[in-house]
Image (cartoon, rainbow, N blue to C red):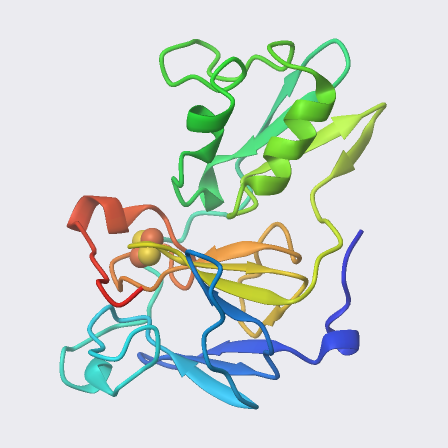
Length: 213
Ligand code: FES
């Protein structure tokens, strides 16, 4: 079920070669769940260079940050893994590589197995709960032919530890390319994603660190 932005009036605007301008957000949290200060309009760093993370301090103007997406690939590379009671769908094009799936439900998601998803490896309820914890929207599921990708949650942005902004609650992103799930997605804040404004896991590759969060 999609949460309509018109109810929340919360929006994210990736500014050209600059910050994420966020309007109307009341719930901004760090990776420990602690509330961070917010107001009618805030500017979140997405170049990775701010000394005041997660907020922008203008560093993008000095470090040559480009907000351009370096890929022309579709955001739809979804593959289905049918099981007896549930089908797991995986979209590699939007994955932020949080690895919650392989760490928290290894009986279903394993990098060493082929195929890497075994939808019969856990109960449907356990898989549904895990899919809800996938921050990027890469995972979704179908039961009896109905696909569930979006959930009903409050508008919120979580600043993850050394990783992306995890957005939930149907916050509209004012971007030409829309995420597969309009309810939740992960936005790059290290500056290195080739799939901007979305996170593609490059924060791992570059060793992005944010000691302030
Ligand atoms: S935060 Fe994940 S690629 Fe930048």
